[in-house]
Image (tube, rainbow, N blue to C red; front, side, top):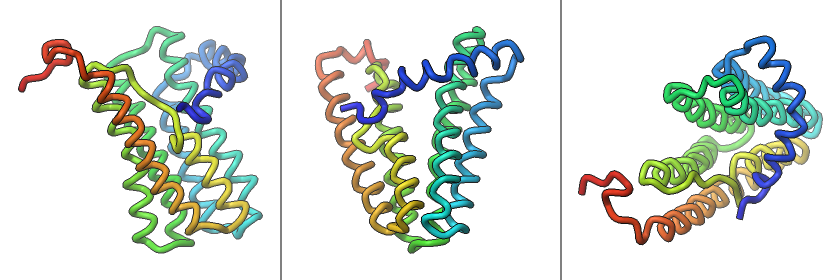
Length: 201
């Protein structure tokens, strides 16, 4: 169940011209990662300080840019032969920080405890995917409430003012997504010998 993540190849094709321009200008992939974090933070400020529905368009544009940068940083690294282990760490940190920065905008409009629960739950799918990759399983991305769906839900909140319901959906949906990924990973690794996944147990 990939959800909106299934649109990633289509989105990448739309960004091909931008990617080629970035390659020509020798832009650093890490710079794109941090640009995505800044866009997420700006979206949070817009969500928190502008009333619904007036914030919706700005939040949508900024989060579309955040997703574009998340798509472009890895593609640019591959295109320019700059895939490094340090770059992979920066990419993962950037994704987590962008998610948390985006959800921080709800601190202006919703109970702190609910924002904290949603933010914590939103990290769950990524931690499960990273744990699976560390154990030798293919990296699992996508929905039902992955990164792209979370961005879409934040835009919905900005458009409607349904801040509390959206946070509830983000929290529950993220936990469901983590569970779906964990179940898939568990099946994927079931028959692999310990040596194949680097276990020290």
